[in-house]
Image (tube, rainbow, N blue to C red):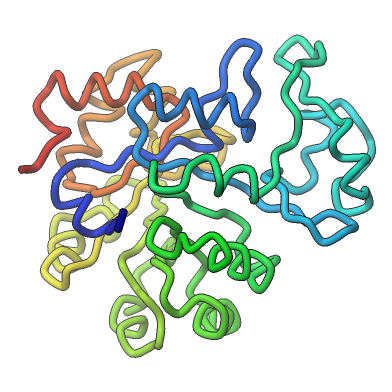
Length: 278
């Protein structure tokens, strides 16, 4: 089954579940969290990348072993048989049944089911691309990086056919530059802390849409001191005002919204008539 991110974004706002949908006793970046995200209506799941001592890729955020696994051990220093014994802890620091899942497990389970954004791509580009091609999932995968030459050279070398979004915090004519590179440039991820940023202006978004590019925004909050969308975010939507939190983003005509609350966002967009475009 062929999947096309641009075509999907013409039909509906793409909801991306940041590390899946974690809650209660289901931690992030686990099969449980990814299954939960799809059950809640997410179109895309985001996975992190860590490489074991044996060269196996796992969906685990680097340097988060302490908070997520309750251990001082590090995934890059462990062999696969040691990693298989690890278990995530929940919010109360109690050990759960959920283990650290490999890329092979994820790709086998979610092939033809959803889009997958591989975060931390630039740290292990060859290994990640080898697995993507092994599973023949090039059309499902989204990779991202900053606009620096070194990162773009890596994308061009290892992933020229895989959907690529460039992450930017300011407009330095990145869009025009990317069109000249040998990459499958599909759009931009914009990060802004103020509402008057050019990156969230109607003119900027319309320019990208006219060039058949999509625009990704983050409503998630990983640190409230580091605003990704000028406080139009999950926290604002759920604790204060959904219109100010999520409605503002929808009205800006962003194509992809990455959230930690996929079901609540889906229900809000559908109930206000802003999820579907066709």
